[in-house]
Length: 104
Image (cartoon, rainbow, N blue to C red; front, side):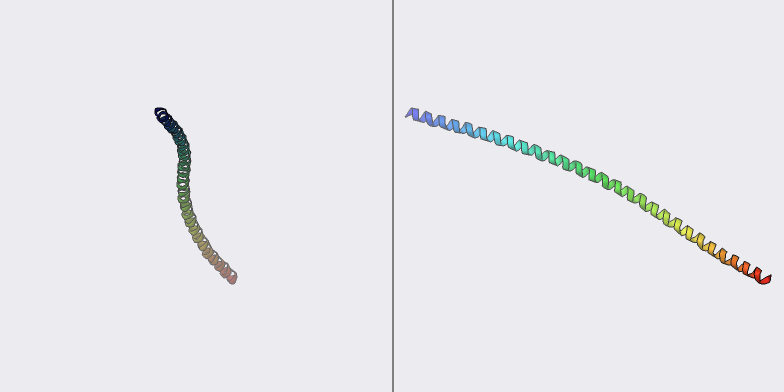
């Protein structure tokens, strides 16, 4: 009877050892999965930071373009004023020429 108890005990110890090995393997597998997930998270963070920098760069470019647009609009208005003034000068010059012809 004592021999049967020892056999059961030995069998239980073997089962516990097998369960321990299975558990250790599962822990190693989960460690690998965690490592892989951490790597993916790091890559995602790097990508996010890169996107943030690009957004900042685009925002600065937008500001520069808005300033250039405003400057170009001001220049256009100035050129329109000059053209308008030149048109008035041209009309006046044509009137002077017409009067000169009439008087000649």
